[in-house]
Image 1 (cartoon, helix red, strand yellow):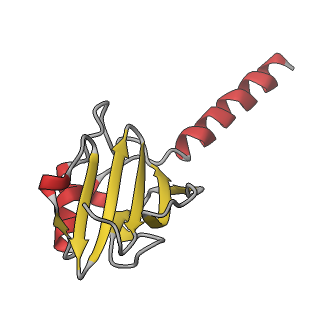
Image 2 (cartoon, rainbow, N blue to C red; image 1 turned 180 degrees about the vertical axis):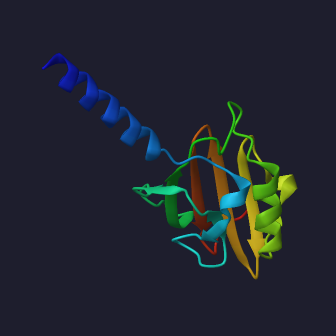
Length: 128
């Protein structure tokens, strides 16, 4: 009986480690749920969006192991991919780990934390 219990625990541990999403450049990118023209890492797991405020039109929260470090620094290649999709970072508007990007009059905000990131589409009347 003890052997069976140990075997079941090991099997469960193997299954759980296989379900971990982790950032890797090789996995590529896909469209964000809230804006088809903004990239997010392909293997990011979307979490329940936060309530929008008057400054935010849409929001999405993603969980992905390795997407950010302790300071909330995003991977360099992810920032480069956002630029390849036509977004220009508004570097003078960056506040800590909050990055703003502009494309065709739309402003997106990207907030990276360790293993979690948020993508916000900002409202039209937002003044940065």
